[in-house]
Length: 121
Image (cartoon, rainbow, N blue to C red; front, top):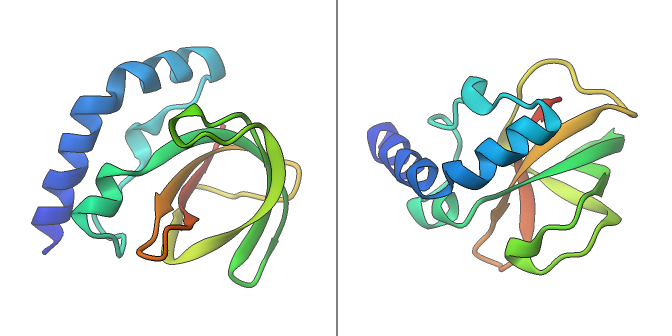
């Protein structure tokens, strides 16, 4: 099953690396350290995942309050909101309130987005 998830993520990267390369150059984030192979997502969720830059305002049990940039892929303007953390979500490095991060948002079966991974910028 992990092989399927890894292959699905590799396909997602092949389609989306050009926009992310631009984002990396703009924001200095390096996504090469993100290992999504152990995340509890199906191939459809991985394919629909989106990335955005955000500031963490607070992190609680199962949620994070963030102020994120616009996310044109899903039609969201820049805003501050609470987002659920997926069970098994990954945090690459230490993330605290006030930190600038890159978020990977995953659309659940319920149609709502949740944080699948976050990495400090």
